[in-house]
Length: 330
Image (cartoon, rainbow, N blue to C red; front, side, top):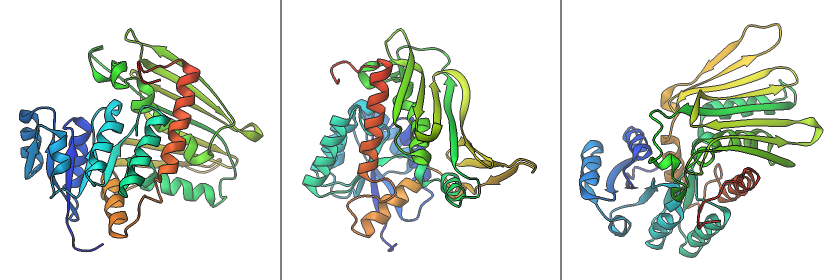
């Protein structure tokens, strides 16, 4: 990359925005330059914490700032389509947090806006940029473990206290386990096995109507399948087990920066492959965006818009099967 330092704008000042900004600070090629939030006090506090030069209580002002090179959209996913398009209509490249949007129609609108304005757009989904996944894919593609026969993947925590006023339980904001954490197990199945031939799904709904737990099953040809689980009320952690003909890979992480693989082969000791935190994390998404801009690429080859569209199509099917509805958006 060149010596250019990219000025990042952060749209929304919530928890995930803080994690992203903290990792961005470790890069010499980018910096937190400006932040926009729903109120000035919150914007100022975020700016002070992460060293931003400017702060706004208006997303419009953030998008219009001529010194901002890229905007990371971190608002609730019910507003991703609106806010990403606001930024792109101001000519700003956008890295938009997952879930990319609420449905396929919104994703199509975002892609059309990117094409119309001739600006870069990418979903901020960390998985395909992580060294653990790249290594697991390499091992499987090498043929050393034979064909993948079954995948089991999960992401769960016990949200305590059980507060129905939180975004996670708000259907108007796209709350629910599927779009918040369930998309990780779903993506893992797509990443290692591709699109399924059939999908079944069952959700446990909260009092507010969102899916507080969801179970999904993918079926493929040759009796290959995947079982996926996500929950706000089950503290199971996060992990993916890939069962192959000649062994098994266990992908584990405690955080985006702390990840490893356990390699299990019959008759051998379990081998653990750990990864340097410097090579892991959300910052890899930022690195990819800046690299693409340096190379004048309209989208990422690692997380292309076609992949985000396919991903959302699968999520739409799961919601349909499970009876999950976002009021006024379906």
